[in-house]
Image (tube, rainbow, N blue to C red; front, side, top):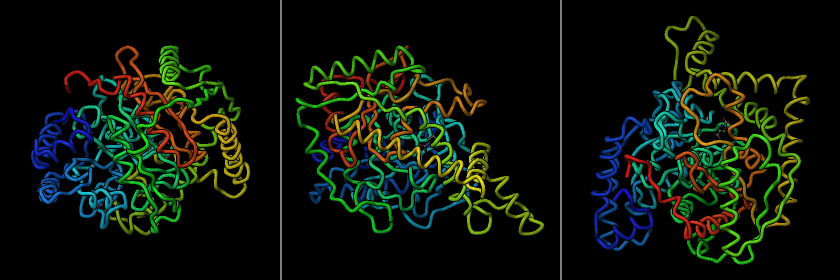
Length: 483
Ligand code: GLN
């Protein structure tokens, strides 16, 4: 059962080939069998089986919802009522969320079965899942390599077939980069498409939740459940949600693809460049035309992001003070001692680095020089995309400059780590949607193709991704030992 896609599982449940309880046991057993990957922080077996039983009743009564009875898992950044929600941090190791994130409610309402909470970089800060308080996640394609981050547990769990679909969040690449490094499909929706209510904030103007699955068709099913206006999130956009599955079958004749020359310069592994070129050739055969576009301000994306994201995180993380919830130090001498030791002991090194940078960038006297300037650069980057997308339907390029790197290889060098998001970060700054899909292998490690679209054009991205997956089988390959 674990080899089936969500679309196939939904058919199997409906035809009575297996029940949701059987399906749930099957995946729970795999999660136990492959515990060494460290993909899950919490497994909610009892709750899952109760949800599966309820789903089987709904199926017997003729439920038509595609998610009814389908096992999923949530990145541990989404609040889950009554279930530990750690955000990968010691700070929240003891935190049982008192309510559900809107995304979680939507999956519950759709009859999905939550198997548990997935490992992630601490507060979603990282590109390798190595900043997690719960230890690194291993990449199923090579257990000496990182799965990417911050949604590393999400990507590894789907690649290892421990669960057919999961949620991730993407502030600077955290859905697309791990999806690419683990050979799965990951969609970062337009900023505002999916509610952020109950999704623990890292950098509020960049954070966006989205689906991670094996196929674009499954991503369409998950996004259908996740997307939509939420009055509890003031940045969620009140725009109708299209029928994503209906749009994926459209043919690609006449599609115009833009290739930014800045994506193919120095720093990109030649092997990856060749794989992206052959993927683009496949699109030509599917009827697309290709032209070069230029985005001169892309080179400023990393420096602008590493001012804006830390600035916003320093404000967001000020709520973790040892008073209201989360970690509290032993025997504080006074209030200042309580604050400083609770934060000092509760946060990891990378989170502290970001808080320090952000606090500095926002302080009086530096605000104009750093934060304001970064915001101006952000606007220039958005304008670059606007111009390019007025000429073409989608933009294509690599997701990552290299395949999955070794565990521990970049932990000593934060700048090298930050550079692994060089092709993803600009999209968050612009607020655009983008998808990463499997496009080949380099030295037996997966490589992703990134497709970027117009605001709220998730339907087009899923369509473009799905058509490619109809004529290629990269997304069907499974890592050795996990078949
Ligand atoms: N790797 C980037 C960072 O550390 C992006 C993380 C993310 O998208 N959550 O900030």
